[in-house]
Image (cartoon, rainbow, N blue to C red; front, side, top):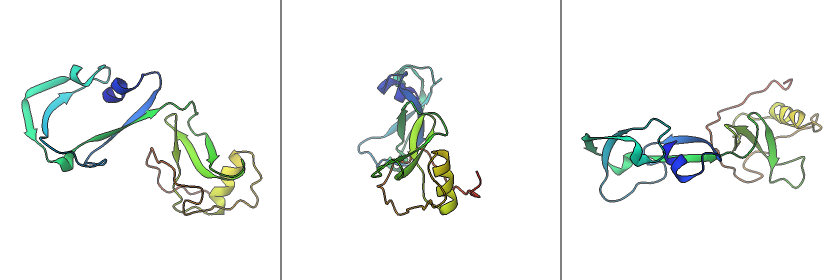
Amino acid sequence: EVICNQLFSTETLSSSAFHGYAAFGEGTGYNILLVSSCSGSDRRLVDCTLDKNAWSYCGHYEDIGIQCYINSGCTNGEIRLVNGSSDREGRVEVCIGNAWTAVPEDGWDYREAQVVCRQLNLPYQWAVPLIGSYFGRGEALVDIYSTYCSGQE
């Protein structure tokens, strides 16, 4: 959070996520770790407590990355359809942590499609899931695993 707060206004920041093992690619050059301790309220990374006696060499396979999620003004649990030719079709996205994230298709069938349409106050009796990134690939900001519905939700 400290890095996201340093890069972006705290008023627009929704949340952050940490990714290890070079999730965004490996860097080059020297890679020395100074063990740090941040309180979360620190304004800059250099304001965190650094232990200059506790260091170790790290391989670039251990480079860390972060994602800073900007508050999109959505409400947790809200859903939407995007990239469709009308408001009755599109890629399903859900608001989690005040940020929109794509929902994976794993295990989806007509029941999940009916629940989405019902939640959006759309006709749902003949709802059909279109899989395979039919409406384009979305960005999954949060790991959402298989969703299963009975169709009565």
